[in-house]
View 1 (tube, rainbow, N blue to C red):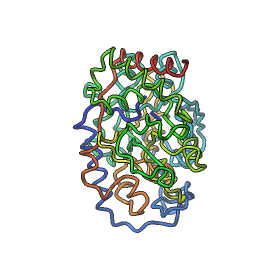
View 2 (spheres, rainbow, N blue to C red):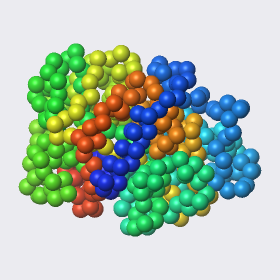
View 3 (spheres, rainbow, N blue to C red):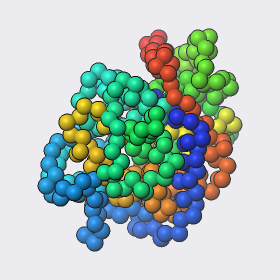
Length: 390
């Protein structure tokens, strides 16, 4: 899930979108339904919609039971679970979906650029321009997305390049420092905690070069859009030094949460999903509001430009915006969904805490970083490979 899973086209677009979704959560009055599998109160129905609820409509007039075909989705590990494409699975019983996986935005982009044949792919903001520039993404015919009206207009803009809709926004959230309050006695208030030898052997950094450069830019107050060669060299040396105190470079959130729950890791670069997961399990954790600011990220889905399964891919994206799938995303991964109706239904205290819904200033303290250039992407990814190789 995301290089910096928190890179967006512009502060104004993403800030407005997230404010709208958070405000929708704050205004919720819906009574929650029974607990989700994670053990917290949930607004989500079961993975399969009840018989009284109509399935997600098809994006064309072809009856759902007549839709056939095979779809390949290049995604992040975990999203292959049925609950995260429940509306599609329950609606199109005669279509099949296969999954391939990438470990980072750089990995997913590399697979697609190298000629990957996935019909649908799942990048995060900051990397979207590359797919359009390389001719890898098809324009989305939103007139065939029945759930498109549930996505706020400001949020839709995140997936637009040059005024055209190339991507459908789906998941969003924060990045910050997650820490064990029973192990770390002084509250963490800076990204520098990831480099602090006080926590030697109990720190976990995400396995991602652009993410590491972003952290360094926050710590030093650098302009992330203009990282100089000297600054990059300084960041490289910092992370080489950090390697000696780092317990784990994590690639999946489940890997991180397991390490924090066991007590191996005390301090970690993390998305708010890990925070909510551990909070719900009773693990003593806190999610920092660093003085340098949190980061925010938005995930989107695109369709490969030359995919022979374009119509089926549209159906998949439309179903991704469905109510059951959106609720499952919120209550199982604790990520926000671009379906505004789902966000308006949140009342669970743990979810409200994870999204900082009751903190009206949280977005003013959040960094919405710009797109990477191709040169930055390559340089930062190469830097990280050198850090891990030394």
